[in-house]
Length: 83
Image (cartoon, rainbow, N blue to C red; front, side):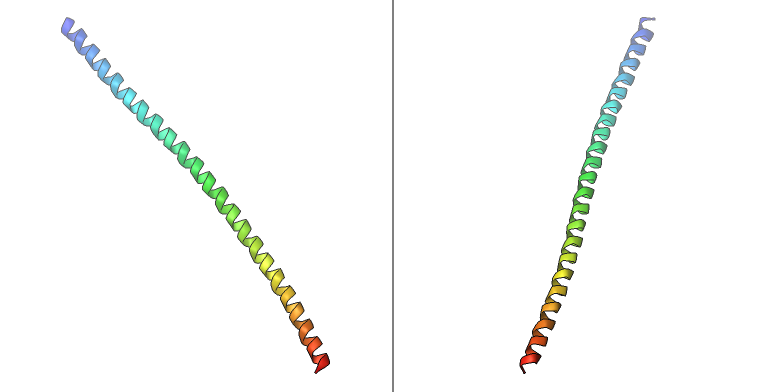
């Protein structure tokens, strides 16, 4: 009878040990998943910021090009007046 009891205790301890290791593995996976999600969110925010800045630069270049063309036309007009 004592043998069966010891076997049951040993089996119970073994199962608990496996459950604890699974719990630790799941906890680590959960922590890793949260870290990955956080880093993905940070990367997304940086990408959005970069794209917005890139668009702003494009718009500024377009305005600069328009101003350049206006000035170039004024210079051409001025030059023709004096030729």
